[in-house]
Length: 187
Length: 218
Picture 1: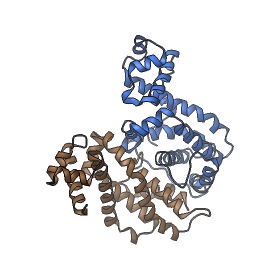
Picture 2: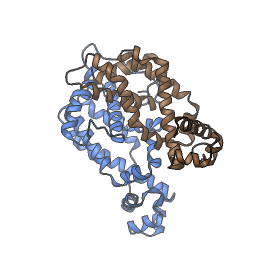
Picture 3: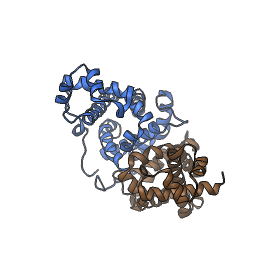
Picture 4: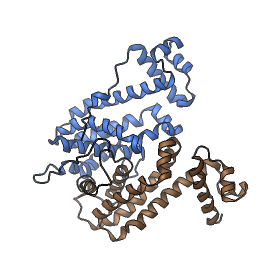
């Protein structure tokens, strides 16, 4: 399948989900929106609706972190900066992601299981951002950069999704969180 | 921490003998057929009670029974690990027993396992995003007093408890190739290397951080 076709289908799916929600989006809606034959749709996604919806969640998560990367330029940041700027920017992007917020309010039962299946990949991707910085940082004896990066990625994602009593729009609090809780695990 | 949350506030009212038997039956049925397919008749049959008895005990029907089962299991979980936590003689032992017991309880819970595998939409939303905040509060309130035995500052103990609960939830819901939560030796190394130092970090003289001053639900 041409990458362009897949992309076109996912774009269309996102539009449909925005319009009807996840539960009510059908393969017909997506085919119409993408201006493709249903057969083309099923060739691209033999698993049908469930497969397209899982794929669109994965795709949008990847785009979310792609935009985050462009916003903060992780390659120019050291470990504390990356965590602080990353948490602030990601939380803001999350709060302003209208579709995400609406789905969390109205269709969490549809969205969350899909998101859960992408989580291992997200943890891995974030750990890959963090690991080179850990290799350069002064770590406590025994701390393994890969294992530490995974732990930090998990914690950062956890606080991002559920800040609890932390206000992740406040740079002062984010700095304290990063210093005293996240980085305290590795250095 | 803003509003003080105590674990006791969330403990369910004690169930009487019939209610307890019904909850056992709910868990048996859910482990076999899941939440959607379990009927009130299934539950009555498994509990060996009449439908009338069932509805007298839980007038709200199936969802109320599921809710009661969840609450009782949470309470049972906290009770199960309390004795073990109290027996721990140092921070590392506390972390190891807390993490491995919690992981064993969760992975050995057949009803929970069935639902996570086949009906994740029924449970996962309660463990992510805003809805996790309450679970975090409850679990943190439960764990903090145990940590206070080794981390004397209560606000640091509360922060540390929250961190631990987050670590546990992350590794339990999304298993890592690097850490098997039920393996006491692996967890001990992990706790010693990453967790205990983080919990004690704020205790070092001159390093005590001010806890964040924010409302419980910003």
